[in-house]
Length: 302
Image (cartoon, rainbow, N blue to C red):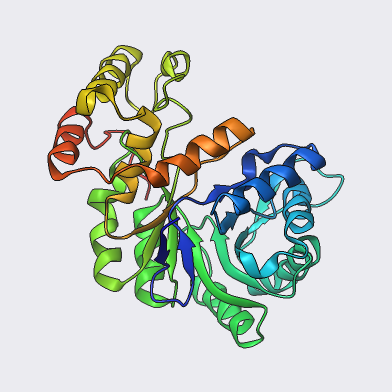
């Protein structure tokens, strides 16, 4: 599988990664899926300490035991949860980040994290303190690089301007093109990569997604989605799988290093991997897709 450089880092990530949040709570099944992903050419695994209150990290850690050198491992921090308590609180403090990384390392059964990401963020955060925490973790060798996972353009711009992030994870798809207008040009200029999550828009942009389209998506209504799905299916004579079209669309932007669709079954995983073998979209196909979709009028995140 093709690998792309993540920002200005020394990390080269598979263009299709694995979003591990959808692995579920069956340990044996989750570990098997991660092994299948690695065997299929995926080297980028993304998890978070929040997913199933650390259980997801534990499963990923079990899966990569003995295979650590084969993967680029990413996880996230900032959503603080305590065993026995419901819900979580937002905590981007230096003290919490430096404590939480040790718990993630233990669960992941590794002594370093390739990409440590702030799992959200607001302009009211102590941003300088947060950046300082990540920089110290780099110096201590506990993480190699850091980034931010955010859909808020103003927060992303702050970190682009003030920190050494190598990546931004954000929702990006044919149905959510807000990053094209809001942050992708800046990231391309600064040499920072986008990690695109949600490329198939909760399954709507898959051959089996008609039912999911009934609920709408962002400010798209079900009728508009039905028309768009039909047009995407017919694109290129109907020979290209709709999900592959969606994944190739996200990968078409020069600032996108990898997409991370989730997979809860072998069938879904292999289908995602096959997108890497599909031909890139032509300029005419990209133009056609952009004429079908639009930049969402959904609430702009600040």
